[in-house]
Length: 357
Figure 1 (spheres, rainbow, N blue to C red):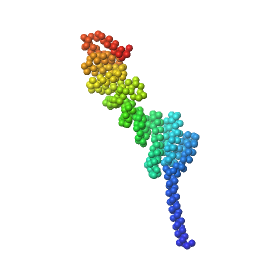
Figure 2: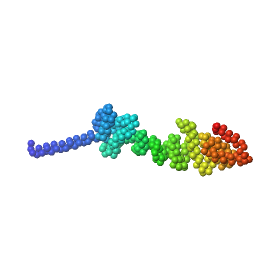
Figure 3: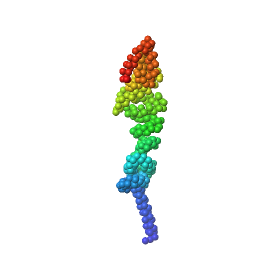
Figure 4: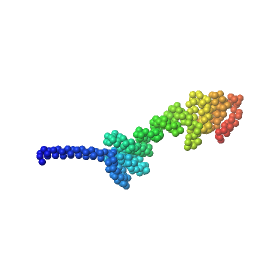
């Protein structure tokens, strides 16, 4: 073979090697793409072998190692579910610290969406939607539960808010509000408003009532009154489903009492009278209701009606009895030739009307 021919042969072999090497490189890249079917088929047997490990802690450690090695993998959600099965015994034992530590260890290995896009751009969108986000939700939801059980309210709230940010779902709002109700009234009210915006009052009335209590504690009477008025607009004349009527009557008496107090303070006596009569109707033991019924009727030029209301307040013998007694005697004397003759009979009738012994 001539020297020229040998050179051509060598060059040809070199070109072939380069070409074949390029093809092999492309093929290798396709095989090792983390979200490829090839990688899935390669990982699956190893994952199945890990699942057969009888020792729970060893299985958990193997799953962590499996995810740490791969990170971006079609097996991620499967691994997370099986790992949480390993965490469950700790939760059953109420070893919240261990359950939290284990869950956070797995969560720390979960890749970001940006990392998935960089590693496998053509398949990342599906991976993020169907695998990554559900995995994150699974782990965060578990952390919400464990931190809640451990009464670590700030961390429970943090995990719940992260879950909501990841995939906004209005069903999470009551969960977040409940957590904040334990330690942060201002944040509770923020999420309470979100609940009221998302759910009709027929479903959110309990939140509105709790918000009213929070506003009362903050001495924001106007906001409390607004909340209670909204609830009574819907459930003032009816009882919510599955609520005992006696329990709801107490709630209505409380709500109308707060509303009536604001109205009476504005000297709107006719409206206050209507509201206080509702208070007395739903709770006949409320002496303040009869006291203010008496005051409202007195201001509305109905002294006889005021006398009857004050008499009921007196016989209940509670906080307003002494003040009511003074006004009762004053009005009674003015209508009975400056004597109290017959007042005992009036008080006896008030007792009979209220069932007071």
